[in-house]
Amino acid sequence: MDLYAPMIGLIVIAAAFAVGSVVLSAVVGPKRYHRARLDSYECGIEPTPQPVGGGRIPIKYYLTAMTFIIFDIEIIFLYPWAVRFDHLGVFGFVAMVTFLFLITVPFVYEWRRGGLDWD
Image (cartoon, rainbow, N blue to C red; front, side, top):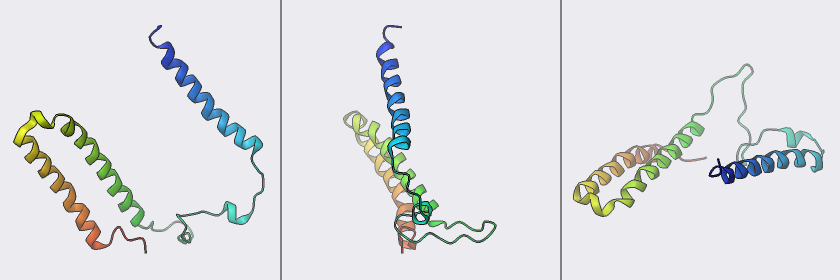
């Protein structure tokens, strides 16, 4: 149990800081509510109008999120390769170049179709 005491202490401090920050901002923060503040905000552009009863959601947000997830996964797969690069030899190099090529092809396809343009 003595080995876990510092970790438990850090978890308690982090939780206290998180809860304390939320409570303190609610108590001390300004209480000025107006229409512009309560309106939705989408990255500095005018909010996309939603039809009554729902409707279709623009796909551009989904495509951009999926692209970032793919590149996060790519970086995670590059770490072990970078650590053991000298032991993998030519096979490891060829495997990683193939992997990078297979990840890059869909990205270039999406980029050429204009999926990353925020017009």
